[in-house]
Length: 174
Image (cartoon, rainbow, N blue to C red; front, side, top):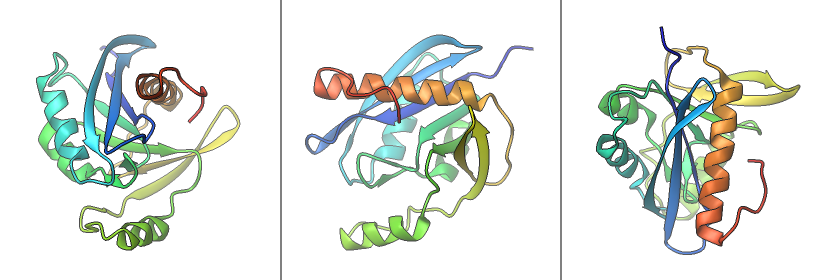
């Protein structure tokens, strides 16, 4: 049985109203492909643009897990995990180094007058990677994957997106 294929996504630097999102696709520590798409800063198009990008890619139907650096891209453009899982048939995880604060995110969205109905309450699991705490947000069922590999893919997606938006990557960590 082959190892699961992981798509890891992260956004670039918020320099204007359009923000690049890069996805790194791979398995067994082999990078198999890169996708990219644009979203609106503080918009509501991250989920739809992500789904469209995956459906257009040669990896459509072959991705098993989607891992994001947090639940929000492009400022406060909130990903909708249940829609992603239903439309693409992949398991969604949001990874962060700091503990997610749902109330603070909701408050920030309200202050900016953004639609808060997209924000889903997710389950939270704390794991340890290289002696550091990492928080995983997920919908209903936690399936253990190689989160160290997934985190390295998210880091690579971050570096590529930052390099595309700024001309070079600014740091290697997320």
